[in-house]
Image 1: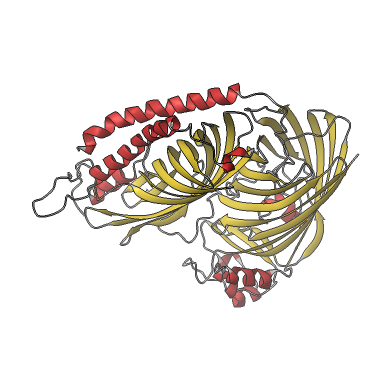
Image 2: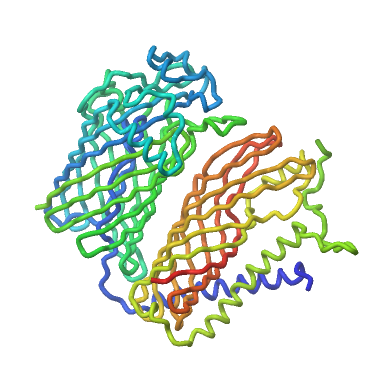
Length: 377
Length: 243
């Protein structure tokens, strides 16, 4: 048989049958009996990107598409612990000059990094305490205020992370050229420091974030629930200095996000997309971050869910061509996997989980652990 | 370096006496297309045969399918010009253009609405393939992807024809050797559509599907800027465990 003469006819047949199956499936789904359906679930795990460079700016936080009932108040406390190690000048990176523990102990200067482009040496364990207050303005409109305090230091997770990474055969060998539980936070662009700190600090307040969430529909047997969310970071100071400049940019950032969720039997599928606009100094960082999240929520019962979600974020670093190497391209998007558990009743909320990066190139944190407690009245 | 040649002038799949017919790029591409094209016919046949008694697994309201899949993808599509760009310097690609893919997928179907319903699936896939250009340049691409797909399906006995659409992530390691550029990057946006069917045999299931993934990535090759397609048209077959 001449496959080449056979193929075009079969392709036309395939196209026709494909569309026929699509139409049948759509008609079948639309004709399915309507029944009450909770498309919201309990919502995805609600934790923002923790990469130390982005912490100073607004970014997307996955969020339940459901809004609070009218007149309901929710107060929530969240603790987040994140370990990050990045060394673009690692002896393994083929990107001179080299930075190892002996160089770090003598203090880093811009001369320790390439004269052009970005360079980073980030050995940070960040603790973040978040207070969030939300209020149901109506049954479909919710306003919220979020305030967080951040500590940067050496922490205690380095050896544990190395043990776990060794166990799974994925040890980040760059860590072997660095001290254990040290704190150093340096980011350079074109020979000038954008971040430079090696003195730990505790509980520095970030800029507050205002949120507005509007549920446009609860969906049905076919359509998903749809919610829009707007966020705005209001600067407390226009030009923060010292430690505060590391965790609060002083800029007015804003973002918009689309939250979709669809119940499929005992599972809820979540898709969220959005964009955050950052008020950054020229020629330092990207002024726009793009986000997408998809995840599965396994409903254990009406109050408990196990969640698995993937969150993608474009890089905070400006895109530059890095010809000829695969060892340093920090302007690419990053993907993280978030797993966790969520418990929500009419008056109480508990959530815990972990974030692990699965696709990054020296532009994402290694691991985050967190828990959240909340109350409604 | 070789003189630029027409990239479409690939060797034809003629048999030489005394030797088996060469598996040329064109013949293999045609075979992949034929496989993809034959799939909907198999779906229709399976659908017509779907009046068989339902297995026990199909009685519950939520079905989980854990599937191991294998298939072919052409790693090309509208806007993709990687191999045309490389051909201007290195001559046309030798051998088959397509790649063989492997994947694991978790699908969840809600079947409580009579003969139709919705499903959602998450899939981890990957491939590792090297192409040889006419002047000996080796183009090596390793891709991994995570796809998240909403599906709508019919329930016809133990047969579930479906259509799905969704998004995802891809990350690609690309290098040219000897001496060419090497990079690791991710497309900004990844979209995916598919059509297929599942057929249940008790706790086991058969999956047949075809679709298209758009996962384009601008890259800098030694022959100039080009657009790489990590996805493209694909056809998969798989075995499922249903619970």
